[in-house]
Image (cartoon, rainbow, N blue to C red):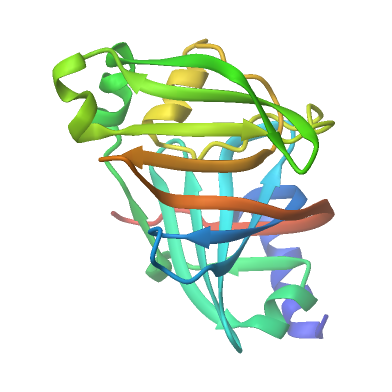
Length: 218
């Protein structure tokens, strides 16, 4: 870590310059947008004890695209050199890369959705818990589709790594039943097609810190 970066971190620590988010878990997924699309490599950094925020990293060769999401609506998107990103433990994001999303509609939709437990799913001889979130409005079910969550064994040390700010997240936060654990697979079924599929490749403990500049005007 160079001296200028260390000085900036010290200023942040002592002057309250930024909002600090810690991550302790690294996951690698294959992302398959549609059944005909090629798989893309994507990474997630999460906090096993606080799933109100997440950092998603899309591998673009020599560069990565970072997307930070918080359940409050805070969002940051930026691109950077892949080697630099993985070498540095701490990442500082300024206001020019941030925005505030209005999540009112997702919060209000909670009353229209429920999690349901399906029969266990077997993947490579592992028997895994399988949940789905569906709308209770039968007329809208076909148009909206349903999202499936298959939970990796022995990962109940981690709260469910649902994307913060989404309907499934707010359903879970309201007390609706979805067990802890990292997702082995998650995907949407719509019009008899599986889309936006995430397939777990590996997970491990990995420490990273992200600092968002305070006082951003949205």
